Image (tube, rainbow, N blue to C red):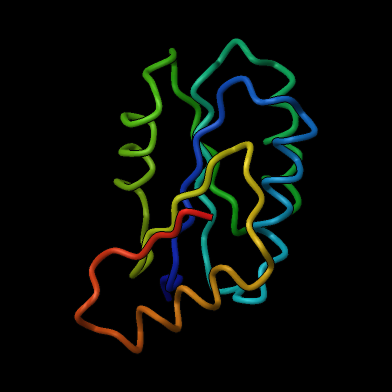
Amino acid sequence: MSPYVSVIMSAYNEPEEYLRKSIESVLNQTHTDFEFIIILDNPDNKKAKEVLKEYENNDNRIILLENEKNIGLAPSLNRGVKVARGKYIARMDADDIALPKRLEKQFKYMENNKDIDLLFSWV
């Protein structure tokens, strides 16, 4: 069965601390029915690759994609969208932190408001 939400994040040169906090904020969501697609857009960033592999090995919701070369944020995210299986796509930056109920609240809102196609905030 496919997950309801596909979280898509591209990583490039974020500090390890930011990257870890960002990933953990997604993995610790109250809504757990999601896949987490992370695209490494800097194949030369060995530390980021090591961190991402660590998380991939410890959580089966993570799908790690590695670009052969830097292609930029939008093409990387589009690559993630192409493999996404979720009913909904949630965008995440590799240096941001999602509050624990983010996916739960957004999923419920989308399910209860079928006329909505796009949901975002400025927070």
